[in-house]
Image (cartoon, rainbow, N blue to C red; front, side):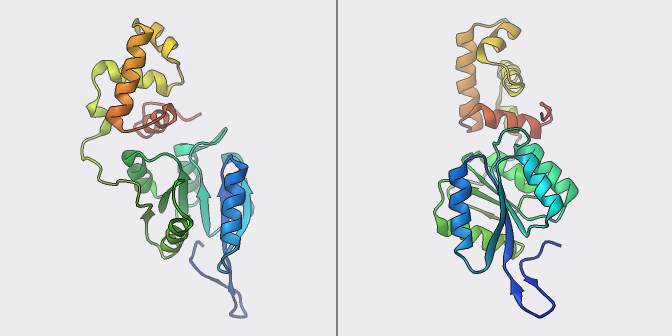
Length: 219
C-alpha cells in the first residue's frame, strides 16, 4: 500500500502522508514546517520514540517514514527491523547524525530506502524524499558509500574485539577493564583505536554495528 501517489475516487490526488520520528522537538518541528510547506506532502504525525512510531503505523498507513536512529527506548537497527518485518514494502528514510558507511550500507541491505545526514540542506532532504517515492534509493552526498568488501570487525585485533563487545553491551571503560583484567587506560586507548578503524564517532554506533553483526541483543 506504499505508493508515491494517492488518488481518491474522484480522481483528485491527495498529499503524500509522512510520519516523523525523532526525540528532538526542534528536529520534528523543523521537518514538519519544511514538508507541510510543500503542496505534495502532509505530515500526518510526529513522534519522539520507536514505540509511538509503531503505534502510529498500526493506526494509520504512512507513505513515508522519516526516522532518527538514536531515540529513547526502542530505536536504531531493531526499530528498522521491526518496521520492515511487519510492513516489508514500507518506505523508510533514516535522518541521522551518524555517517558510518558500513552502518548505512547494512541499513540499505535491510530495506531502508534513504539515508540523509542531519548536516544536509533542505534541498537534499527534499531530493531524497522525491527519489524514495519514485522507488529509488538515496543517500546524502556527504555519506561515503565506498565500503570495503571485508567485514569491518575483521580489522580488529582479538583484544579490540573483546572490548568492542563489552562496549556494545553497555559496559563503561572502567567496567570493561575489570571484566577483561586490563587497565582502564588500555581500554580507553583501544576504544579510540576501534572507533578509528571502524570510522565511527560514538559508542552508540558501536552498539548498532554489534546488533547488525549478531554480537549484541537489542534492548
